[in-house]
Amino acid sequence: MDLTDPHFEDPRLLAVAAAAGVILFVALRWTEHRRRQGLTGFASATLLGRLVSGFSAARRLTKDAALAAAFALLVACFAGPRWGVEETKQKGATEDVVFALDVSKSMLVADMSPTRLARAKVAIANFVRRKGTGNVGLIAFAGQAFLQCPLTRDYDAFYRTLEETDTTSIQVSGTDLGRAVEEAELAFYSNRNRKLLILLTDGEDLESGGVEMAKKLKRKGLVVHAVGVGTPSGGPIRVIGETGSIETLKDAAGEEVLSRLDEKTLGEVAEATGGRFVRLGQAGEGMEALRLAIQAGTDERGAGRQGVPREEWFLGLALLLLVAESLLSTRRRPTTP
Image (tube, rainbow, N blue to C red; front, side, top):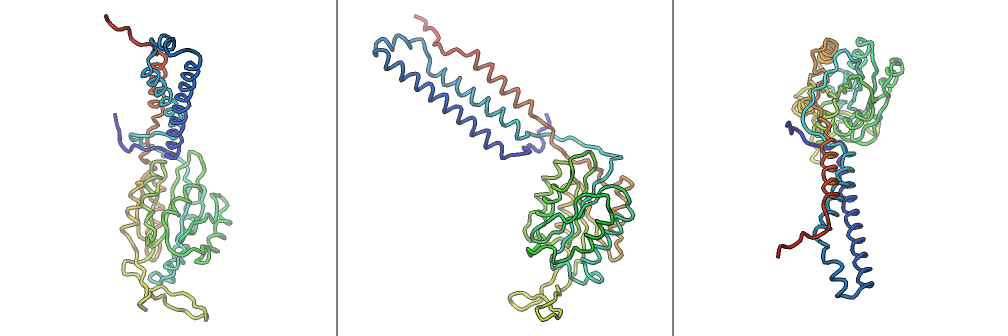
């Protein structure tokens, strides 16, 4: 049996399953204790000994434990046990594409003309214009992530939202790729369309959660393509100061803060879901190459590693425990003289 990548879709329900099993076991033991107390008050010690001489307390305990374990296994089914690999092919399906656009201050670096953010917005608009079909959506992220435009075929509305999106769209500073990927998961509809997330950022994941979140999404068949915006040499971050003049961000030591393209992190995020990493390029050639690969079907066609549902194993074991409990008698085995 293929035991690759064992996990649960909703691991929080495992705690519920364990608690349910413990509660049932305690309730059964309390009921048994009350029954014993009732017998003690009803009969004398000598008569009680005769009444329960054929009763096995150990077998009663075993039956209670079997019932509690079976109940816990039944509840655990709702947690979605998964293991093994199931290749999902979705050729010919319509793509739902969500763009996650980095709007942190590092996107104001001018190592791409006029800025990284402006160049990324042009590349997104060109991608949608040339793609021409399917739903598109937009997420803006920095230290937090928000859905700016839900999945839609109204491209004019999408373009307006894209144009209005800038570094003031997210008030929480920083760059959190994990939040962006997590928000994207919620943006997709539950349909049979291919689900593609195109992440446009310089890759400086200050919270270091992007790769782990991408691994979780791979199990759900979502593919992340990462587009690196910027250059490895980078440049200083220039912002408009309180006086209205352009100022360069500096650290506590008074040195200019340089922002560089982090290709390693973006490559790991894309690889975690079977997606691609490309550099945007000054003319947006990386984004165009990605669009052509998606259109031609030569990108990773959503053939994600999805865990195979294994609820039947939990149900089978629970049924086995219930059958064993019903067949197990609480009477002692007769002793051989």
